[in-house]
Length: 343
Image 1 (tube, rainbow, N blue to C red):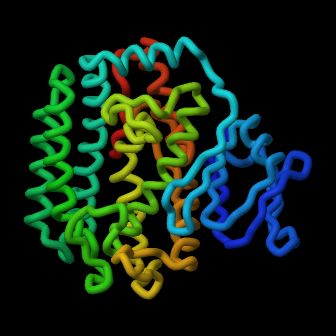
Image 2 (cartoon, rainbow, N blue to C red; image 1 turned 90 degrees about the horizontal axis):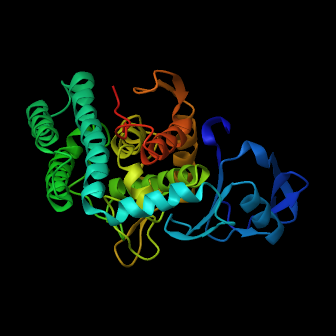
Image 3 (tube, one colour; image 1 turned 60 degrees about the vertical axis):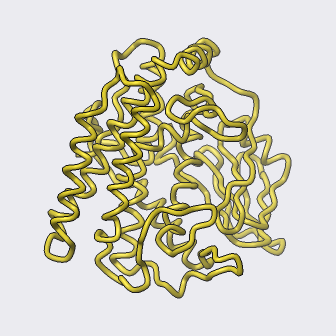
């Protein structure tokens, strides 16, 4: 298993990636700036005008190293993938369950229970750590609302009803998200979730982190032989990695949202690191993007105790462990899918 599921992020415009024996080279203006053994990487993400040799693409595909191409500002463009590996029986079981709406609803229940529990913990932690700086009553009220949503969802519920309860809880969670920002309030104000394109600095940060988290979760699913396109909570849509979107739900509050809040509250990102396009979209400048990617990678190296396995693991490995547990559930090795619940 690759330590931390390390991801190489290439943001320098005009960079070119090449293969040399068992290593990936990053060249800028014909000068090699970085050389990394391929076996130390779980993925490579290229932003904007970054080239890649066909030999490296093939080598990544053969060695299960995810290679994704995004626009300079983080919009997903394409992904290089080799022949599908893994157990065909596992994928066939995945497809059968995805076609069964009752089974899909049960799986969606496990995922949403984890997501909502983690949303509530984010709010509870904010009250505990910053109760004197935030609107404590509003945040506690939202936390109670989400607690009721957790009690109300049931694995026997129809999928649409589960989605409705989750949507209401998510709306309440984001209604107090601005209260969790305790620094730079005038520059990082949050009035609601928006995307495609993000219209403010906070949504710009959230969308960007969600995109790179999706890359890591998708790579973990592919590594255990699951099809990231066929989901349960998120239904089939051409070009959409629905299962990866399903599995990342439990990580959004605990990993992505807290990372964004931390970067703002400790002044790691500043308003001057963003720019607004003619269409009104807010975009990150290169220095801000690099700061975020470094923080993302460092966060993946933090250790936690896995709530189901009881072992100390790095957060980077967590995505892979959850993919393995999900595969075990599909194989009937587990009675239910133990979604990651942050304690």
